[in-house]
Length: 621
Ligand SMILES: Nc1ncnc2c1ncn2[C@@H]1O[C@H](COP(=O)(O)OP(=O)(O)OP(=O)(O)O)[C@@H](O)[C@H]1O
Image (cartoon, rainbow, N blue to C red; front, side):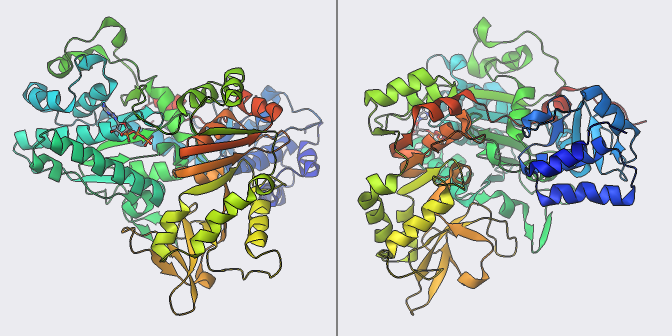
């Protein structure tokens, strides 16, 4: 038995959820002799999931929560777990964990078994896809079209061109980059290239699916794709090739086919997605279970293309999936020599610095990281601030903010309450929502401005801001109804039955017959889906929302409010995600100390995915 009553210390710390403690207590009820450190590990593994980790590292439990008295030595803790019947010890990363143990200890991480299995399945699925063979055609025959799609002189150095060329050879491609680096533009051209390749091989046009974790992100992607297609039509690209490209996107849930009241999907390994190319945008938002299910549903002949910005916040739910895959795939700045040789007809001879030495890797997915920002004539000059934030350079970020020299970036240093300092301007926007001509118009107008906060609770939290905004909208006198006309809504749980998902934004609006209904964007932006407010899944107001919930959306004008005191949730990824939600105007209200604290911290997550992807698989015994 341990000398340290660790589980009691966790209980009295009041940091864990009731659920985490109840899980450990259930193990103790089943076996009263269970080692205290095993109980603590069970509670922490459960708590880790709630905090976005896949498990927790026994070497570094302080990453999860600050605790006094000190933690047990990692070796002793591991011994206690190894001796416990509650903990499985798989011999290899690709081995299924014993089904009767709710915990797994592997490579120094303690997992809840279910999440370890998601991670194992995801790694196996990604390796399977990356190892599939796809018909690369004859790149030389595509050279003429390639020159039209990528007219730059030095195509080998043009990472957009590289990404498109690599998609011909590889069934798993990751295209990463910050805002405006041309991810969607690249995907559009890459899809045209695949359509041409199919036509040259006498095959039907490829069936292509576009999806993203949220409806808003899917719409944004489809809109950018339509614009990129228009410019290709002007550049003389054959209309038949463009016709192969989809003109709309769907949510990942819709793509996979939700089943009412079930976390399972219609598409899975036994009924794979009927597409030749599946393109997923905003991949940083996808959590471990969802990514595992997506990958499971990818057929042997299908190409999977994941797009994302690796500097954004990781998914709220368990994961950090994108960064795990990216770590395994490399920095995305080099091409393997065999790829370079195969693609020479398109890319020419690559400069030596663009190729890398070792050709053999366990993980065969390919990544291209786009660097150059293309958004020209921007009214909002965000790039230098985004770069300083991304790299954690607080001195430069503060100097840029204080100089006032970045167009349409406004720094409200030390201001903690925009409702007091700029209330009239903000309220005018929200009042106008209620005056809109239709629910569709109100939803479109709502995207013009959003207050983003780092936290949900506390004086600068989304909850208290929403309460104050509603009070101000009600004139401070009459209490508004719960679902008043003009109230912005944020769905906070997935409801497969409604087709409404965590993060979806809607509005309460009169239906023309005196009834206030809740309206959410549908496939066609001009005809939103309507729900009775009493029948909605869990929801909050969305006048102000957390940066976490804003992922995948953009707003013309963003007010980002950091708390006045330090907080563990603050990170450079949070600030980066918040500021890059702005399209034409950014207001940042923060104090120097808190901004410095945020930029000094990474929102890192504990996961074993990268390790699994680069590990050689062991043959099942
Ligand atoms: N190679 C290029 N030449 C000229 N313009 C380009 C090029 N690549 C991208 N652009 C332009 O830059 C802008 C941003 O491109 P795009 O929407 O593809 O970027 P993105 O990385 O998908 O952006 P976001 O992160 O916002 O989704 C568009 O106006 C696009 O036309």
